[in-house]
Image 1 (spheres, helix red, strand yellow):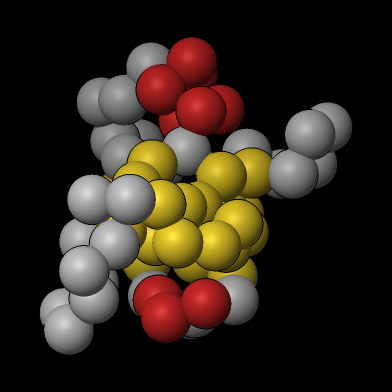
Image 2 (tube, rainbow, N blue to C red; image 1 turned 45 degrees about the vertical axis):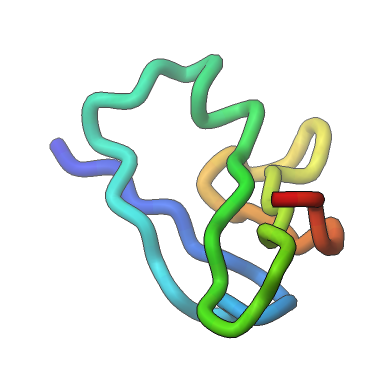
Length: 63
């Protein structure tokens, strides 16, 4: 069964990431994503207590 994260807000809004094979802990912590044209990375993570497969933009994170 595949598991797909959807990005909400920010530069990757609406895009998806296949996290099949990731642990629940890895999914809960979110990720810093490389964004073309940015010096920093984009910080995405799920809302506490929310859907772990909806990652919300938290702002830029130093790359």
